[in-house]
Image 1 (spheres, helix red, strand yellow):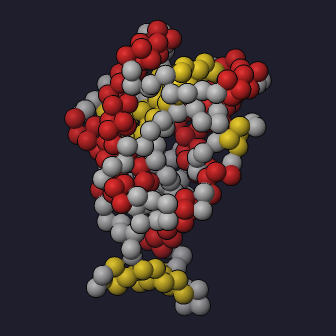
Image 2: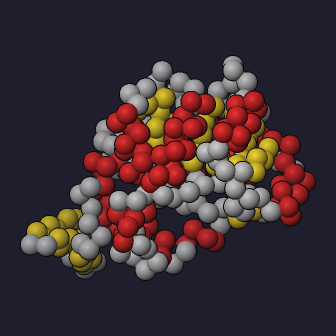
Image 3: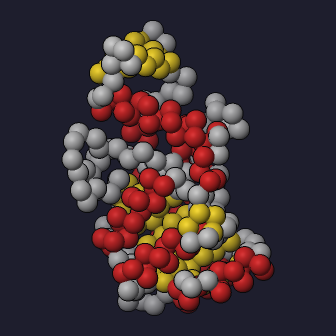
Length: 272
């Protein structure tokens, strides 16, 4: 189901210091936030959302997302986010998927797999530094022919010009930003790469979950304001040609409406 709230509105009510009490015998979940106490049916939408929010926080602190690969390459993403991403790729069917941030190459392989299955499309991966062995492994992979790599600062004039030369005017483009996690860097990437996004497609700024990790082991206090979601919220306010909204689920049963995600508020759909 398509959401109707921005990422900032959706998440502003959440406080990482909320106390959660799960009573499986009584089938209740109770949240205690300061002087406010609320009790829900354990098998309700509200309980699922409360448990899910804490589950992604605990999973991040335990590096849960470091334990996945795609076609032999490390992929640092929550599987739920990859499933939601493929729903959008299936619907949009972009000619080009641009991703800033290569790391182990697993995300690039994931995108290339979708292109292969659809019988169209290619992937452009950009990173400040791409290890020679990693480059070789990607190029020799059975999906390597669908992947091009650009080494350099993602927001530099040289790199963005290179991307511009690789994308043909008639091609549809989807962009995923995952090369940096500071508000400033993501804001600059949004301005640089939003121009490539075609109407009906998306630019996705990942890892807005950082805002909810400031008090988690390994988190940083400054993440409450210095995070990708803050950049997305401000970009959406400046750019009416984009709509900040969770994409519709292709299939929907039951009352749940929110993604379990590391990417809250990440989705910016180009309207025109």
